[in-house]
Image 1: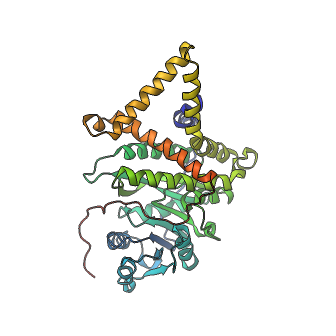
Image 2 (image 1 turned 135 degrees about the horizontal axis):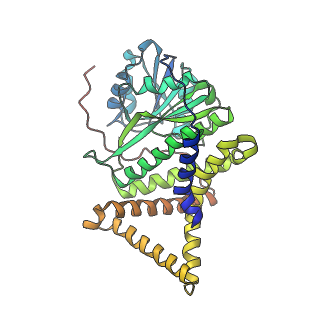
Image 3 (image 1 turned 90 degrees about the horizontal axis):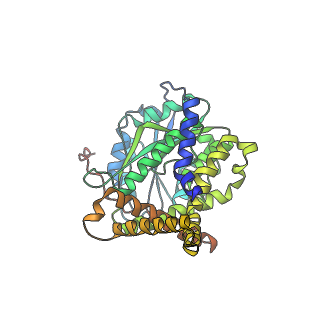
Length: 378
């Protein structure tokens, strides 16, 4: 259990202590390099117009902005909407066959004109000054990638159980940025130097790989708390579980393919962060199962007996989150339920990985469209 506590509480505490002693700052100034924004889409007919309008309204110099929609063989009318914006310098890059998010991104990278590439999803809306704020971080030559912060809400604008968990993750990312570097970027929106996007791997998650590529190139990855990507929670717990399993399977695949980055003699602080944030997190379900089984078999030991019943109580509390009723609205119940769901999803992902499964195709999470003022007509 000590490893579980370290993975979720001890690691952030270590980062907090070290950043109080010495924090890594980012030197920034206003710059306007050529930027390519790549919007990846798979059947986003209900969101793509709003996303394009949001992108064109980011307030970045038009002569330095390159907007590309990377369609993963969309067949619902998404591509036709994108083509309506050709007169406003929005380009469509289409995969002829459905081959996954990273494959579509790679097609767009191959024609991107920018020195900085911004990857974003159709469901994510950015604040008007977000792009300017993201880009200014690259005036620091040590920075290779910059992540927005995620803001996850329900239809009424309130934080969900997942949203509370996301807030925790954003806090950890801020600490990681000040300590040294992020070990993963936000899949909803991140910026990266184009030189780090060569030979884009179509089988490995781009948000995780972006941070790892930056580390290999001698760069840091940071989160910019002043830039936020806003999106709604998924429409149901069923979709959320599928999304988590898919995300964890992709993450496990990337980690196993980059185990050499755990070498502290070559990668120093980054190796420590990767082991603490990713490796241990992915192993937490096994730690929890071991603790539950071991303490259950040794109930004669008073200390282990207390540990066993504490775990049983926690999982009973978590189960209330899946039952209709007043308890489901309690923050403690929602957090316990979401934490337990995350661990189960990780176990399933490990099982799929052990069986040789790969998550190559991609289906965007079923999220409602954020309600914003209607875009102006073309």
